[in-house]
Image 1 (cartoon, rainbow, N blue to C red):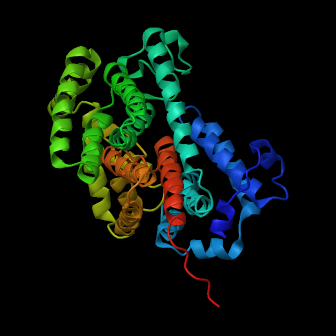
Image 2 (cartoon, rainbow, N blue to C red):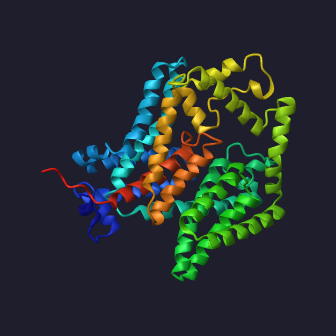
Image 3 (cartoon, rainbow, N blue to C red):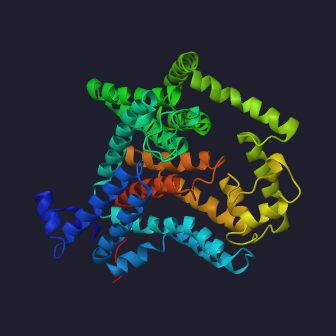
Length: 432
């Protein structure tokens, strides 16, 4: 089935779109186009992604071959996302939160159900590069508008725009600085592999073009929109690349060059200096006066969450229980201790509070299997690995698997790359 679908006839794209009702190849082509559209919209729109994802699912249904599809769901890389969603659904039964909050908390795990569907579909097609290029082009266009907004803030489409925005919102055309920095970080580090490939093949013009794009992303993140999470995760992601693909001498040379570039960025960017200097100041304000600073709040959330986990270590407090627990813990408190949230800003704690050790085991097993899926060589394997590594790293400081934007980056990246990798493996013989 997979090889037959991949040998698509050489007909025009428009003909494939119009013949989708009676042609399996055309259905595959249209699903690929919907995936490309999701990748284009992801940096810009929340509702647009949801609408196209629904259309994607509707387009997928007629193309399903039931027996191969059901067989594909039995693979561990598919079982665990489904199990995660099922756990969140069952977890509503022992939660004491209002039912509206329980069902709302199930929503962030529902996107994981797209992973088995994406795995299945992208085993049948060779157009994964379309999706990755579409996302890169879309993010590159966003950097152009980010530079424009940095110098002309009135161009921003953000509804909370003010003539004198705080520096965190400077250079934000849509959404917020956290989402934008995650996109730019992924694009920046992902291009390390094709740059290396072009340099080794002596295709210096293509390598120079990609290096220019990397510098564009880096300059924007250093001079316009500075994210502390990105500052922490980029070095780790680059270290993974060096460990997997570079000799130690090359890695050392790149490390020295990175230090020089970082020093130049530091001296050139007041934004970067201000952002990094906030680390120590925020911590001191929290320790001295219980100030509700960014770092102080995270430390408070983590401390309370650990206490909540200790109260129900095995199965947790149930789906949607986090806000109620923080409300009860905030009674009679002030400053950072009085803050009430439904997200402890750490993926492991978010899962552990609601579903205990069982939930953490499912989460870590899913991450591990998705990492193992991308052990091979090649650009697709590198992108898939990078998406998982980024999600694990940033989930130390946020619940990014459950956040809409970063969660969809994970689902699309892992689903498209993972399906392509699975499609390259030998197909088991059909039972006679």
